[in-house]
Image (cartoon, rainbow, N blue to C red; front, side, top):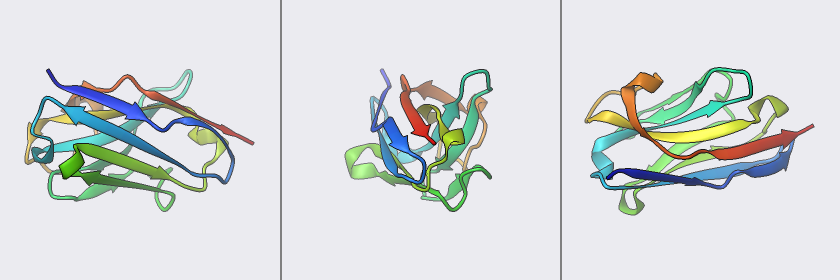
Length: 125
């Protein structure tokens, strides 16, 4: 049984930083891509960042230059370092693991099969 558990969300002022973590279990972590998605109220879920098995990364346009995704395979953990946060970054953030191993960087939700429960990020102005 694959499980993903996110942590690190919270309330932060605009311009501040947060680091999200996602610990995975039940799968050989290092073989699979990982993604961070977010969903704001009334909006569709969108890709924030993704990292594949060899460390290649992708960032959504709205977070380029502000967010950094990384992974520690020894700890089965993927991170999302968020800096220069804006009120529009307010959302529930989800991590997910890709359906197939050893893939290129995957950027759509349909390519991920297991999801965490989400962690709320609120950025106040």
